[in-house]
Length: 367
Image (tube, rainbow, N blue to C red; front, side, top):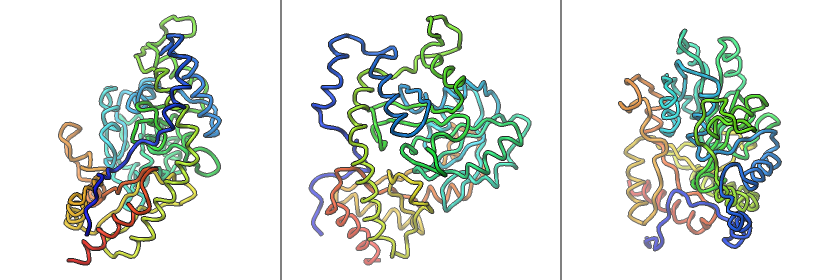
């Protein structure tokens, strides 16, 4: 089979035309106002609230800071129940705020934290739960809400993947005490680097704004233990430009997902994440193979043709010694060993998808 001339990676940023970014940035460049909650940051926050149908959003410098800020604001100091099937930043944010991550295994079909296993992990030291909406697939928010109320726990959702996802009649970002999302270049909506905290609690919203700016209130008095988590005007300008193309980006990502699914769903060695398409943003294309050997065979074949999927998430976080002492999480570990995300980004062509799917099928047919 013909070798792919141009390398295809797991993702590329969805970017507005450069001149649109420059036009939006120009006033800040002329005025010299590049940070400190400038007009572009404020405009981006307002425009995102309109687009997402939410009331409060605090933009920050990156998605990890967005996870740390609610832990600090809610003064959580003990154990935080979380998922082992996630990116390391989920755990890093907990550790950096001097809390202890406690892993609970995932549902092997949804990939999300399994609520039926949470209660057994709760101790007198438990202060919060940090679930992840994996690949934008909503967690069982009802079950988590019941448990949080029963035990007086705070809920911070890692919603890094969950932009533009609606669930049960509202934005997925409005569940829990706080949702933290990411605007990293690899995400569906990006500001290059960036993120945000979303809460329906106005007092908590104001506190998060103070924390991101060294603890200053509107009078520049230091009233919180804060740090520098501010988004710059440069990143906000990129976000405002990219927001203009979001409808096209969302439409194309769904097209890509459905093309892959139609071409690969009949393969015996592959299964897919259990989702409700009405509550999913199609930002990733995960495949689960029946064995790690099958995954390696496909990855090797694609790499030979300059196609670079990603084992995402791998390894299961409970296996990392730098995070915590090992505890068995069979569903997460098995999933991490067998999952591979295929390239998915706006400029990926139908021909690229055909080529990738043909290589995968030929790999299986040759065995």
